[in-house]
Structures are given as structure tokens and as C-alpha cells.
Length: 365
Ligand code: 13P
Ligand code: 13P
Ligand code: MG
Ligand code: MG
Ligand code: MG
Ligand code: MG
Image (cartoon, rainbow, N blue to C red; front, side):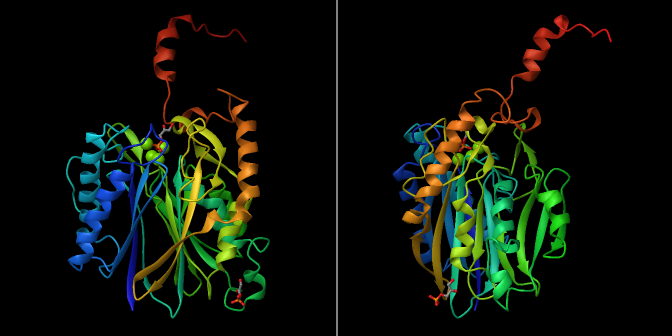
């Protein structure tokens, strides 16, 4: 049976500040998706949040980039924004950057990850959602899951994984893409994905072309005077069989790594794996969070979720993230905590430079 899994997300308003979502907004989304399911537009759905980002997890049979599904998601975000406005939540409608829907939510502010699959006899799926970071944040864990034998022993000892995987990488600034085959091209692959603010993994497939993972990475579009398509990403990963085991998919998050985002989208900070309940980035609006919901698909029905990072075995990772957060915070306004100038979401550089222009004197030798 062919099933499309669509995860579409947007920040429609934060409670309090950018630290969490309001239950009334989630309830409004629930009402809309229940209607869509009743009409037969969706097979099934699950509503959740990661920090201040509202997540619509949906299954249907309309394929990816479907106008009806995207428009329904957009209308849901617009309706939830009305609730956010009534409650005067912070940044109501923050990620809805266009006035009217025009065929596809991509480039309009929301993030989208979708895959169409032939549902296997057993189809375990993990959906990762992150807050206070950007789409290149999946590069390191996807590399570990699908190309690093120190993470994924299946690459070595499982016959159906031994051939490796293909990585589709997007240059989000120049809007072009390339596919690398691993293991033979891992050094070439790493030249690019090691620079996650510019090169982001869009998808991973088996060498036979079966989709294994897809992220919400998209080309950056200049909308409302700022780049969008970078923010608070999601990623869908299929597990078991020809794909990594669930435990191999979760393992990269036991070693917290630094990502771009955090306070004002302008800092490097450790990504902390947490339960949905604990996706409440509060300290310096962070540290950045990642949640993981597991489902078994059953004829398109979402059996679950299981909140995978709630497990005690991620406690050490959380503690490490908190220690790394202290270390990074001690730099205050200095790099490498603060992002380099061209990557900051906020900057006063143009105004301050203009004000001081007359006081800059040429250097003599
Ligand atoms: P089981 O024997 O419990 O199915 O485990 C197999 C496996 O692949 C674990 O990663
Ligand atoms: P969000 O993208 O999660 O709204 O975060 C914005 C921000 O600037 C936090 O400090
Ligand atoms: Mg926000
Ligand atoms: Mg957010
Ligand atoms: Mg955001
Ligand atoms: Mg942000």
C-alpha cells in the first residue's frame, strides 16, 4: 500500500515568549485535522509541538507536494494564529510570511518534510523535530546513522545495509543539489555537509533508490526582508530492515553537538534530546532541543506515538548538553558562541557601522 507521510510545521505564536506552545492552539489544530480525517482527506494524523513550533504529522494517499494537503495545513496554521492573536501570544503568526496560499507551503514560512512509501509488513518510523536551530542541524546525525559504522553496526554486519546509502545534499544558498554514494564518497560528502549553514542533507536513500530519510531543508527564499527555510527543522527516518535499527537512529543524539540557533537565532549551542513535554527552551531561549516521536504505520494509521527521548538512557546526553551550554554561555557576545556576522539572524552591524563611519581612519602600513 502506498502511503504519504507529511510533516508540516510552523511557529504560530509562543507561550511564554518563544519557550513553548499554548494548549489552545494545539486544540484548534486538532479540530481542523479531525475534520480533514472525517472528510477522507487524511488517513490519520498526530498533533504535537516542539517548543514554540506547532507540528502537523499526517498520513494520506495524495503524494508529496499535494496542493490540497498543503492548503489544509496552511489554513490550519492561519486558524491557530487567530487563537494565538486572541491570547496575545508572542509572535502570533511568526512563520506565516505570505498573505495568501499559492499552491505549496514551501517558501511561505512553514517547514515541510514528506515521503511517499510502499508500507512494509512492519514500518517503524521516527520523526525528529527541533526548536531553536536550523535545517543543517540534521547533517551530523544523518551522517552517523547512515554512514558511520561506529554509530551503526548494521553497516558492517547486516547484509541488507552493507552496500551503503545515497545522500542528496542541497546548496541552500545557490539553490542546487548533488547526490553522494557512501561509503565510497564519504570524504567528498563531508567536505560539504561539514558546513551545515550552506549545505544541508535533503534526503537519504538505499542504493536501490528506496527513500530512507527526508528533512525539511529547502532553498533559502528571501521573504519579508529575511531568509526563510532555515528555521526549526523536522526530519522523518524509516527504521529496521534495509534501514538502521531504531537504536542506531537515536544513537547520534547521545553525543550532543553544536548547532546554529539558540538566542535570537544568532548563537551556537548544544542540541539537547528531550521528551515532548521537556521541549521548553527557556535558558537563554534554549539550549536548542530535539524531540523524537516513534510510530508504527499500519495501513497508514499512525500507531503511537512513543516519546523516544523520554527514555532514561538519554539522561547523560542531557547533562552533557547542559554542561556544554554553560561553557558556550561563558563566551557571552564573543564567537564561537555568537555566530559569525553573515549567519546571525539579528545584527546591528549596518547601523553601528554607519554611525561610526566618520571615525574609522585608514591604517598606515
Ligand atoms: P530483536 O531480536 O529484539 O528483534 O532485535 C533485533 C535488532 O535488530 C535489534 O537492533
Ligand atoms: P524561534 O525561531 O523558535 O521563534 O526562536 C526565535 C528566537 O529568536 C529565540 O530567541
Ligand atoms: Mg517563536
Ligand atoms: Mg521555534
Ligand atoms: Mg522558528
Ligand atoms: Mg529561529
